[in-house]
Image (cartoon, rainbow, N blue to C red; front, side):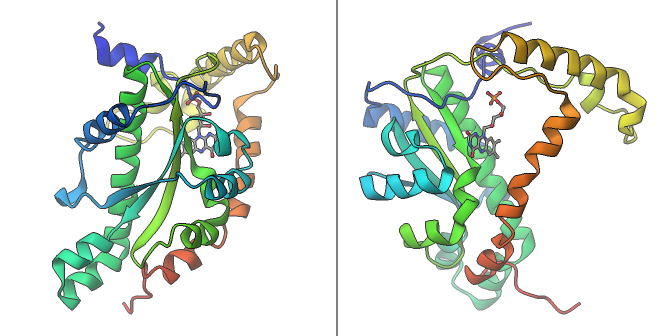
Length: 250
Ligand SMILES: Cc1cc2nc3c(=O)[nH]c(=O)nc-3n(C[C@H](O)[C@H](O)[C@H](O)COP(=O)(O)O)c2cc1C
């Protein structure tokens, strides 16, 4: 079974290097407005974007994300969880309070996330590439200050896009047995065979990869990935400073 959407999703890979070919305003507008059709919780559209055009700010975001190319290649946005607009629109203290709580906080992050994935897909369908940069939250407070973010907003992702300078290999994904369960949750030990099969695919991927050949298993990758949590321990504190997640008496 195939169509253009399936082909685009199946061809996905993150791009981190972009050519000098400019991305036009019209292309960017098409990507953003199309991605806005992503589902949005309670139709509240609780996200917004800041495009970074100031070279000094790009350089600072490159430092925060530890990716020098963030300063120099393609176009760069920051996707925000944004309940500030909804607070302005709803205007009553009760509504404003509701917008600060976990339920609406999560909804704004979910909205921003679905919107970002839709941008990834539209970008790729047009022959461009992109990288989602969770690493802007290595220093959330600095990003808030750089972008003058008001209460009830938080940076969720950086999003850098452009015309790909390289064609990275496609990374494999877990098989269906490892992620689709019937009626009840299945513990990983019950689908160990699917995990072992994935390890073989991962091994093949890392061996044929043109850069950074590695020889690793999923368990090792998983352990290595957890280092970023330590870098982002102040996220809850910063979210509270932005007016989200008040302590609630039971
Ligand atoms: C929430 C999220 C945050 C991410 N943050 C970064 C990042 O900070 N830097 C980066 O280079 N890639 C980042 N990525 C891209 C992932 O590394 C990439 O999607 C993953 O390795 C799978 O590779 P693929 O997208 O090429 O299939 C992020 C992806 C997601 C979904």
